Length: 472
Image (tube, rainbow, N blue to C red; front, side):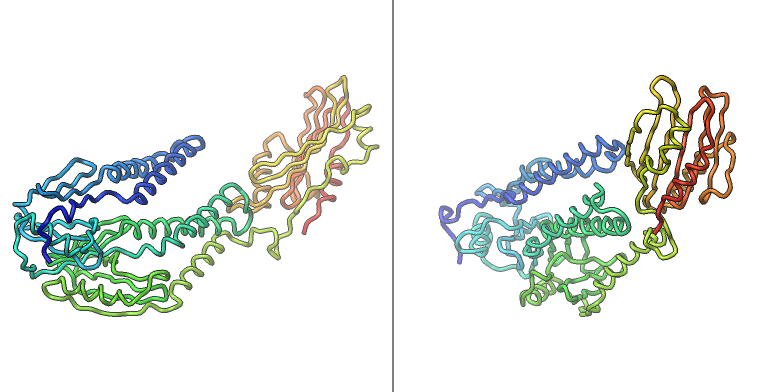
């Protein structure tokens, strides 16, 4: 039916959807906050985060400026870089594209085609819009011989994609801030990071992905790439069936396969329209390519996920965990003020004040310290007990061994028969005279420091401190 009264069909004006504007604005705000945070902790990371922020900001500007106006003068398209005008005399054909309501294909005199996507549809539907555009272009009512398909993925999966993205982000954050520690934390971080990447890609595909097919070939926009294929380049189209839905793969004669954004189905977007859309896509080719249907094994994706998790757990090396059967390490520390009896303290530090206690926790270890000292002299006894725990790929015992190798120097003397390893340092030139000893048992290092005019032997309190450490 031709529409002859332009007042009945007002000039369509296509603007960016409010949801697209909101999403772009939220993304820019989130990336800005991320850049500010990274700048405060590690400025070199800005090299990687600033380019995505710039691209997203440009996308937001384009979204805000985007507009398609169809009036008596022609078609005007405004975007990021300016406005393009197409007068009606340059239009030689107008037709509706199957697959998405409101999508119209405009054929131009230079032989190119312009796809106007998801235009506002008047009460008479897309056919009424096409008829009005043909009237304004002064075209006859004869339908063109070529057919077009324009489709995009269903956006129903967004109902679960956004919550899953939030869950994946939470897994990354709880491991980054140490809420989850120990064995499995790196695996949780890896799962969360993989989930963030997958769901961001899926959301971008659902929001911006589209496939257009016409007599000249295929145009496919996925999450991060745009691909154009002439029909002569397409060897075959494969319909891949999986437990999670159906999708179409374009197999070219040369180059990588292309997964079409549409038509496709998913867990939350199933229906009989897939086969109809696929048939419509095939009819757009001057000569239909070979078609093949294949099914992926039902357990393929679950098996990949399981293998991925097992690989991450294996890379964490459970043999370095304290619960490993052949590893015996301390899970707690004794009280350093109780490892030496009061009588021994009085002999080493006469007239000592009550002990000062301190505890300290840092990346990779925890430490308890007890100090006795005299009021008027630089005479005192200090006992420091430090327990290492696993940090990344370094086990607790290995971390303690590394620390002992750092502390040992030419001025120290090896002590045998005391823990797993021990060494002392005596400095009689120090005022008052100094006696120090370091001794390790598994993942615990005991350090005793005595400053006195006539210092006693510090091996005995070191031995008693080592004996008070419980290994499991």
